[in-house]
Amino acid sequence: MPQVHLASMTEQEFEAFLAFSVRDYAAEKVKAGSWLAAEALDKSQAEFKQLLPEGKDSKNNYLFSIFDKDKNIYVGNIWFAVSDRGGPRHAFIYDFRILDEFQGQGYGTQAMLAIEAEVQKRGLDTISLHVFGHNHVARHLYEKVGYQTTDLMMTKHVGS
Image 1 (cartoon, rainbow, N blue to C red):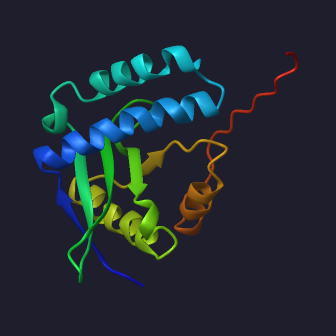
Image 2: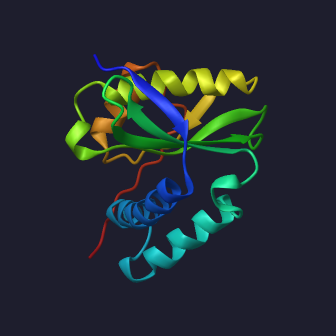
């Protein structure tokens, strides 16, 4: 299994991350039926601006590029924030991505384990995240590394 190294995002990596993630999040919200396509990009941009008002240097936010430790190649990114919403301080993973060409090779598992050490360095002992119900691959990964479902929201469309 490959080993990973997490490095704080550079400004250039952050700009690439933001451009992709805003579009991807908008598309996922449309796919989940939460947003209309016509408004999704604007809503996504607004959420990212609210969560990261100072860009990659926003307080209590930690944005990492993920690299293959041996080959020193970029394989993805992960972003978490320290939050106290809903109880004691904890880490909340807002975004996690392994590039398509590196999926299924163990990078996701290794990155999720590596982020645990980053969270513990900040004196936290709990990590939460959101996963879209239709993303079975991500759900499987999170369950494999020990995440448990704490809430489940379901929707049924009953009309045209």
